[in-house]
Each structure stands twice: as C-alpha cells, then as structure tokens.
Image 1 (spheres, rainbow, N blue to C red):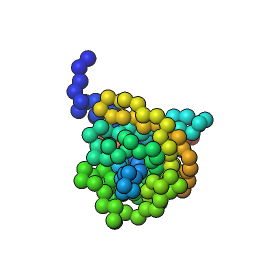
Image 2: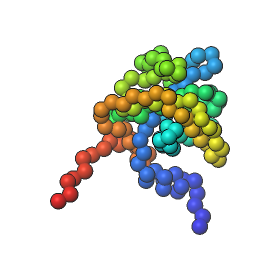
Image 3: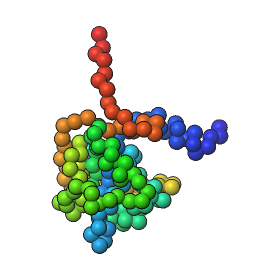
Image 4: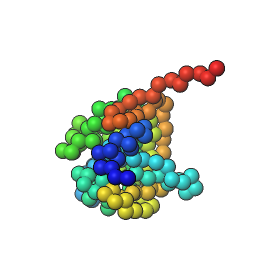
Length: 163
C-alpha cells in the first residue's frame, strides 16, 4: 500500500494529544523552548518520560545537547502560549513569564503539570530525535488540558453519563 506524507500526517492527526512546551537553556544561559504534542510516559520506576523533536526544529541544536529540560503540560486556556512557542521565528522571552527551576531550566507558570528532567537517553527516530528524560521534580495543578486534534487546538468536553 502506498501513501504520501500528507495522508500519514492526516491519519496521525486523528489521535488527540495533549500539548506541552519543552524548555531548556543554551550553554550561555539563554532560555529556549518549543511546543510539542509528542510527549508520553515511558516508565514509573524509574520515572521516565519522552518527547520527539524534529531535526529541523529551530531549537534542535540546543535541545539535542541539553542535559536537562522541563516539560509543561498545558491547560485549556494556554493555546496562545503554545502558539508563541510553536513559531518558527522564536519565542519573545522578554514577554514570557518564567523562573528558573531546580535544574536551571525555565519554568512557565500556570501549567497543568511541570516535570523537570535529566536526559536519560537519546534515540534516532528518523527525521526526529526521541529524548527520554528521568523526572527529577514535578508539580501538578487543577484544570482541564489543552488538546490538539486534526490540526487544531481543542478542549475536553464532559462525557455523558452511561445509563
């Protein structure tokens, strides 16, 4: 069976995902970040998570060599923040509120969950690199998640009760 990359992307878009921002710092201390929807848990013991990073991403060189990163699972009302980190031109960090976390990575306020990680492994993933991180610190908040489905941001809806 033959299919093109657009058909493959369309099929993958049928899988609703959460939206996360990954942050780290350049060697000179400058903050860096990118929006991803390819975030997943790997292991409970040890606590491992992963995300996939496009080799053509603006921040690839920084994240590919970083020893630490932070994952921010976004709330439903954070679509604008997600869009800011998804732009090709870069993030206007002077307009982004953040503070350094325990690893020095930028921590963005208001996320549904924040996980500070040390890089555990890097794996080839075709046109992406899969970064596996060991979770060193985390915090959670109340709220609903921001979702991504068929190329658009979405929010959860209540599930009708089963009679």
